[in-house]
Structure formats: C-alpha cells, structure tokens
Image (tube, rainbow, N blue to C red):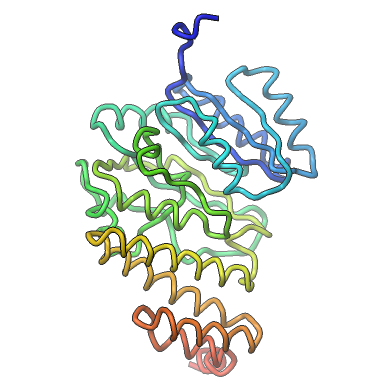
Amino acid sequence: MDKSKIVMPKISVIIPVYNTEKFLREALDSIINQSFKDIEIIAINDGSTDNCLEILNEYAKNDNRLKVYSQENQGQAIARNFGLDNSSGDYIYFFDSDDILLPTALEETYNKCKKDNLDFCFFDADIFYDDIEYNLSFDYKRSHLLEDKVYSGLEITNILLDHNKFRASPCLYLLKKGFWKGLKLYFENIIYEDELFGSLLYIQAERVGFVPKSFFLRRVRGNSTMTKQYAEKNLYSHFFILDQFILFSKKNGKCKNVINRFCMNIVNVAVYSASSLSFKLRINCVLKVLRKYANFIRLKPILVCMFPFIINNKMKNV
C-alpha cells in the first residue's frame, strides 16, 4: 500500500474500558454518531471481567473506525497512555466508557481549535446520577465566567481557580496532538491521575479556547472514584501529585504562583478527606503535611482530620 495515500483521521477518541457493560453501548453510540465523522476510536479493554470485550468487538465489526485493544488490568492511566502512543489523529479526545457525548461536540470543538489555532478547546458538562443517592459538591459550569477569546493557559487557569471552577477532567477538552507531543506529558498510574495531567496541560498552554456548551454528560455511579470512600491509597496519590507539582514549580518559575494554588487546594482536600481514615493514618497524614507541605495547609482541615467525631458532632448541634 502506498503510505503517501493513507489519510489520517482528524481526531483520535481514546476510550479506556473496564467492566462497564451496562453503559458501554450508550457511550459508544454517542461517539459513533457524532456529526464529525473523520475520527478513529481507540478502545482499550483494560482486563474487563464482564462482556465489555464482546460488545467492543461487535461494534468494531460494524464500524471500521473503531480499533479494539486488550491488556491485563493496569488501570485507566496506562490505558490512556497506550491510546496516546497509538493515536493517528491531529487532535485527541479522551472519553470514559460510562458517559455520553452530545452529537455536535467534536465538530464544534474541532472547528474552534482550527479557527483560533488552539492548543486545546474545553467545554462544560452536565451531571446525572445512576440509581444512587449522591450529590457532588461541585459542577462543571463555567460559561458565565468566560469570554469568547483566546486565553493563555495561565490566564484561564487563574480565572477558573478564582471561582473554584477549575476542572481537570480530560473528557472536557479537545487537545491538539502536536501540543501534547511537545510537552511529553503522560498520565501517572495513580488515583486522580486527571488532576496532575490536566493541571500541567492547562498551565503550559499558550492558546486556549472555550465553547460555552455542556457537551459532556457525566454519569455518577456507585463504586466509582468519585463515590468510593476515601482510603489510604487516595491519600498517597494526593501526596504524589503534590510532590510532582513542587518539582515542576522548581523547574518552571513562572508557574510557581498557580502551582502553589493547586497545592493549597489538594493538600486541604486531602487532609479533610483523611478524617475517615484510622487514627494512626490520620496522625501520619498530619505529621507528613506539617513536615513537607506546611505552607499550603490551613488549620481547620487539620482539626477536622484529628478530631472528626468532635467536629462532626458540633456541626450537627449547630
């Protein structure tokens, strides 16, 4: 075959898949039926023990844009990195196998990226709950804060942080592959891998745009990262992210202020959340934070972490 005649897709959609057979067809349909057709879909079956692989192979028989790969269960980060290394598109979109993307999302964000020569273009999302009683304490609505203009990464990050609206999820942006390759940025195999990847992506961008529409429908379900109880591995993933941010800040002085803001958010959330851990782990957490991250921590999270029952009872009696 004459390689010069091979036409590469304009967008690579990367989908890690793990035990989501209940939602997978709806998720795949939302990508396959996008108004923008010039895409490849890279689905990585991450050792699923249900019928995900059978569903993927069924869809691949009917749409040659879908490429199915399988690996032993290694986690979402490793699957996404595999997708990055095997992508052919000029742009990259990360998608989760239990969510939904509205039909014009890729078309509108691609056109925006091309028109304004963007490193990436991001958008909003709506949240819906899958048969669970759970309410997230945040949302994905930023349109009321932003103008129709090209922002620098540092500028847009500071605006979003000012309003507590920074969201690192890679499902909320279309990314120029050339920009990503220049950064040599991959997902770390930890919990909250999005936080590190997305944050470093934002602050290193020179040209960022926004489409004020909720293209993405985020499903919140039981036993997911967002709804599982905070555990020791969550805490140490937060510590890992803090260490990586600090290392990055030392090498990139112009980003120091915004990195400090990220660190303050993360360490305070981590210490608050650690209040559900054992007494020994809470002690170790507070000691480590005071030793390594004292300039980022506030007093209240430490009190909540060390005396959760007293604090919670006082709050109930207010």
